[in-house]
Length: 314
Image 1 (cartoon, helix red, strand yellow):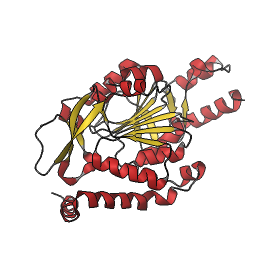
Image 2 (cartoon, one colour):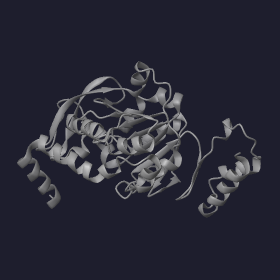
Image 3 (cartoon, one colour):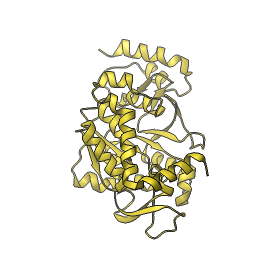
Image 4 (cartoon, rainbow, N blue to C red):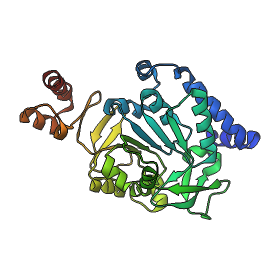
């Protein structure tokens, strides 16, 4: 066992779970408290993207969303980031763990995140009761399990309620969803199966972590997640640092993926979403074909994008 894990267990045993929750809350405030009063523009420039580098991708591809779904919100790192970046959006944050939900609520109140709405439930394929397991005093890697399932020595667990995104959307009469972030430690396929109607109807961008070390707990091959979303009509992109690349399969060295119902032209610094089918402006076919061609070398994309913007957008 690593020194870091030994120290974590020692602190847990000394302080207890509630006091450890408070220490995690204080750490969150220390890391992000200075950014609370920044406006959207300043926040976007000053936020420490080194903390979660992949967050740099989001403002480049997501413009003026109305509704965002944060699945597996944990303490609220993404909810906080999205709340500050999109103050006009409604952010619905699902977190079934009592410990993490308690910290999420503290952060919502302390940081004044009025557009974040925490929901103490998990999402899955059907309405049911399951357990959430927190391995060896470390709630960050909590995962969903069957009730009464075998757990590791020292692991904590609690009963949780699972609902589906489809039923939640229907019950709450949600009319638009623009973006979904999903980080559920291998439970992704079940979440998406329970969101099939929502994905087909609203076609949100989907930002998801997929790793075989997590999916194998459920006897799921990561490629099944890719196959399921592609069947619905999504295109896959891997997230590498602050850039994206077209993905044909899920690979072990890349845990983060973006799924889009439309093709994205990308390089490390610039993204253009190709919504040509609904465009109200005339775009010559040769430029559309050029932009849609995945084989364009990345170094040419900024120039192409500049020509596109300068020439065709009033």
